[in-house]
Amino acid sequence: MRGLIVTADDFGLHERVNAAVARAHREGVLTCASLMVGAAAAYDAVKIARDLPELRVGLHLVLNDGVASLPHWSIPDLVDARGNFEGTMFENGLRFFFLHDVRRQLALEIGAQFKAFAATGLELDHVNVHKHFHLHPTVLALILEIGPQFGMRAVRLPRERHGSRLLAPWVALVKKRLDGAGITYNDWVAGISSTGRMDEAALLALLARAPEGVLEIYSHPATEGAAPITPSMRDYRHADELAALCSPRVRRAIEATGAMRGGFADVFNFATTPEPIA
Image (cartoon, rainbow, N blue to C red; front, side):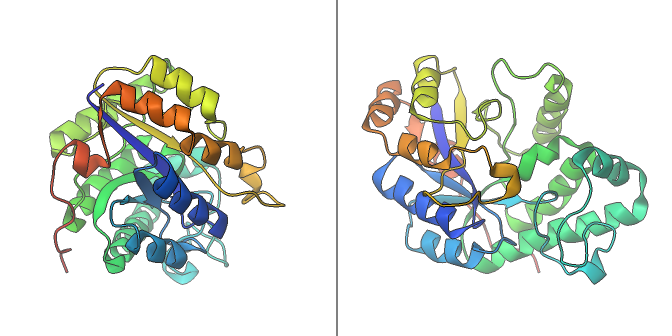
């Protein structure tokens, strides 16, 4: 294995997530976090990231199952009156593809999230999308159009070993378009099929048969709490995932691979975000 990137998604979603990211980076093997710029605890996440200069931070674009960055009046076909994205991914996928006004509003929202990340002053290590919605060709096209204006150099390729064959053609299309745009990406990802269950046993088993190339492992760590962070996370084992990231056994297994570690910028040795284009 040439490179290993260990990422926490949903940075900024909740104070419990932010606390877990800080602990997993300071005490464990976490090297990256993907920031939800419009989430309730995003401001707290940015402060934490500024205090952790070796933590690489990317943009976790949210286009479903979350809160938009723009107000309802500017993207009325995407969100409800409270600014929450509406509709299922299937329904929205059809609307993104066929409806011009919806695509225009989608472009505005994607641009707003890139601008919000740039305003944090953090270096942009990578970009990925909540629920891997960049498998949708319209979403990917807009990211490839807008992202380079804000220094985007790397995008997560949701290619999992032994993953769903139904996704394989879409993953291949993403890879082809990233190659055409000159955007860096990981060879493999781990975390899709075990979402919410990336515990110590899962990580050790994964590392024991780690693939060649660059692997990104992502999970959703959070500290203990009385209630689910979101309704869709009611079955997530956040604390187990945090414990795995802080596990000495996992650390030793990672060291044994001899892989380059860090963020995308470290593994692929590129300079991070230049000044954004006005």
